[in-house]
Length: 284
Image (tube, rainbow, N blue to C red):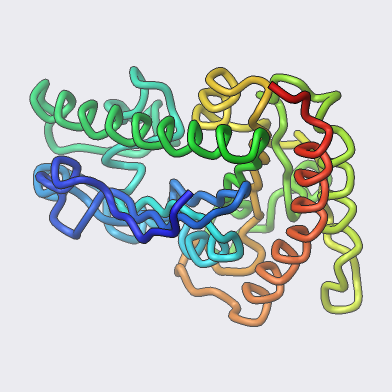
């Protein structure tokens, strides 16, 4: 694969008032990182129709995850807010229409029009078409590949002064593997990935890392595993927002950087496992 810096095509920029729907940087690597809920931008139509404040949207988005995606040689960072188009839900639910679709929030002054929904479906299809082409090239080049699907999640939903949600059910890092097609094949890689995270020296302690405790992976992970059942391992990483104030949007820079270092520390073993799998791949 040729080294390249790529953004989305002209078509996916047409109704977006803050640049391209996504940014993509691709190098010759079997590891891709994504931050598909990083975005905060809205199309002009959604911006005029939104009943939410910027702060309310930001609270449910995954700010700063695009920076963590930079640990990987190849990465995709989505710039559009999930409140305009959620690429981690299936096509029928990708545009939030009612409060029950989005944490009970009052979303719109008027329901999105059919034309607006169809325009978003065009962008949704464009994203997944681009992703399928990219992953197809990675499969052809490497045989096997890993996608680090990076997110963050709230744990103080009761309000700024409310107690945090019970840590027993809210790990600092949740590893979602529930959509994986062939778990046994990827077990050694996943076990060492989680071990690397747990063994990272995080301010003199270990991070609380658990698998499928709170999230098992969303639509993008399911879709990738359905298209590439033997080649793909999507690791859906949900970082609890203990590194930031989810109500003000302000982050603790030191904690944020350390989490990035912990994620980066997993890459050597991922590359090693992928290289070993490639060597053992049957010759065509």
